[in-house]
Amino acid sequence: MLRILASSAVAALAALALAGCAGDVRGTLVPVAAAAPDASRITMLVATTRKADEDPGVLFSGERAAPSFAEITVSVPPDSARKVGEVQWPSRLPGNPETDFVTLKVDKIDRAQALKRFHEKVQRVPKRRVLIFIHGFNNRFEDAVYRFAQIVHDSNAKVVPILFTWPSRGSIFAYGFDRESNNYSRGPLENLLQALSKDPAVGEVSILAHSMGNWVTMEALRQMSIRNGEVSPKIANVMLAAPDVDVDVFRSQVMEMTGRRPRFTIFVSRDDRALAVSRRVWGSTARLGAIDPEAEPWRTQLEAAKIYVLDMSKLHTGDSLNHGKFAESPEVVQLIGTRLAAGQPITDSRAGLGERLVQITAGTAAAVGTAAGLAVSAPLAVVDPHTRRNMAHSAEELGRSLHDAGGAVTAE
Image (tube, rainbow, N blue to C red; front, side):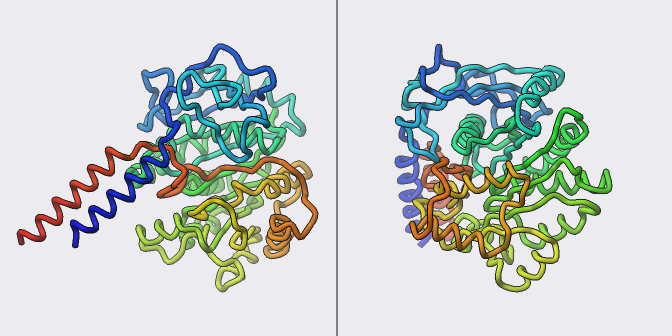
C-alpha cells in the first residue's frame, strides 16, 4: 500500500513540476540593458532577513541573516502584452521587456541609504502613504519582488512600496523551515514598523500580508502594542489575505494588542484547499482564512473586536486551490484602492460588500472599474499548481523515502 501511495505521490508531484516550471528561469534579477518604450517601471525598497547570495541574478537566498536593504526597479510589460493579475516570467535570459517582467536596476544599500531614498520618495505621494507587502510560504526572493511589482502596478496604488521579505526556501517541502523563519523575522518586521511610525515624513502605513506572512505580521503588531501600549496610529489598515493562522492564536494576538488597534480586514474563503491542508498538518480546529464569518462563535467575536471580513467563498475564479480568489478579481482591488485612498475601511459590513462583489463578478451589477487583479497568492499556497518550482528532484527524494518506508514495513 505504501508503494502504491509513493507512486501516486511521485506522479502527482512530477505533474506539478512539469506543469509549473515552464518558463521558470533563475537569475532574473540581473538588470537588462533597457526597458520597452511603453513599459511601466515600479521601484520598491526592500527590507529583508534573507542571506545575501553570491549570484547577482538571485541576490538573496532562502537562508537567514541579519536585516539588510535594497532598492529594485522592475519593468512591467505593456498591458497589451500581458494578462492582468499575473507575472509574465521570462522563458529565457535576458528577458524581453516587451513581453516579460524584467529587472532594470538593483542597488544593495545600507540602512542610511535606504532611509534617504525613502524620504525622497514619500514626499511625492498623496498623503505620504506607504504600503508594506509581506509574502507567504514557498517564495524565492525574485518571486516576492516581481509579485509585489505586479500588485503595485495593477492596483495603481499611489504609495511608496516597501517589500518585507523573510527567509523562505521556495520549496513546498520546506514548510517547517519557512514557519520558523517567520518566527525569526518578527523582531526585524516590528523594527521596520516602529521606524516608519516614528518618522515624521510618513503620513499613513498600510500592510498587506498573505498566507503564512500573516503570522509574522500579527506577531510584529502584537509586540509593538506591548512595547508602546498601542499600535501606532499611523498604521491605518492591515489586510490579511487567506491568513494561515490558527483562529485561537489570532484571537490571543488581537487580545494582547492593548489600546489603539488598526483597522483589520480579513479575506476568507471556506473552500480554501491550501488552508485545509495546513489545518490537517497542524491539527488546528480552524485556520483563520477559511472560517465562516456568519457562524458562531466567529460572528460575535469578530463584531466585538471590530474586525471586518470579506467573504470570497461564492466567488469563482481559475484558482483551483481557492487560496487567492481575489487575485483574479480586478473589481476587488479597485474597491480596495478606492477605499484606502479615501481613508475608509475596506468594507462597510461583513456580508454586504461580499455580496456586491459576487454580483459584480457575475455581471449582474455595474462594473466598478477595470483595475488589474491583486495577485498576492501564487505561488504562496502549500501546494500551488501555478508555482514555478522545479520539484522533480524533491519528488524523487520523497518517492525514495516512501519506498524505503514501505520496504521497512514489509520487512517487519
